[in-house]
Image 1 (cartoon, rainbow, N blue to C red):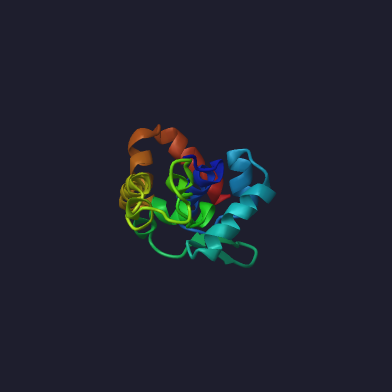
Image 2 (image 1 turned 60 degrees about the horizontal axis):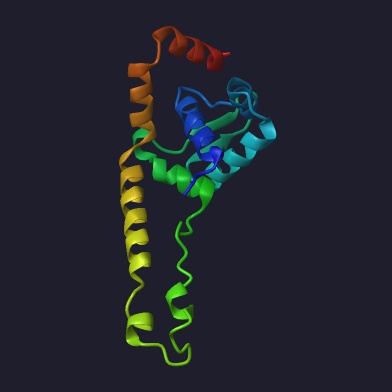
Length: 160
């Protein structure tokens, strides 16, 4: 299992967008050293998922649609990666050489695949954990761990 780097960029962006005013794509892209085009795609996904909204005008950009404490990591993962299950069971057990594919035993077709059960349970636990972490939580942790001068410099950068 691997999330794209887009999830990481989106989470970082939401910390900056969570400030007092809308933040532009150009500012966010320059600050993080990535292309505006790439970041625009991430922000479009976040907008379509209802995580951010765009604000028009001279001081426009993106802002959060709800308080940072109500936006979870899982909201961001779903927006960027989609909502398909990570594990796709191909029912490999039904294709092995020792079973009659036209007359499968109950254990192969009426009982759930045990591998699928374990993998989906693992996904459920991961989703629950990611739902327990919010952008507000992340912003609070960053404030505790990052040098105050760096925080001030970042804040000043986005106030331009």
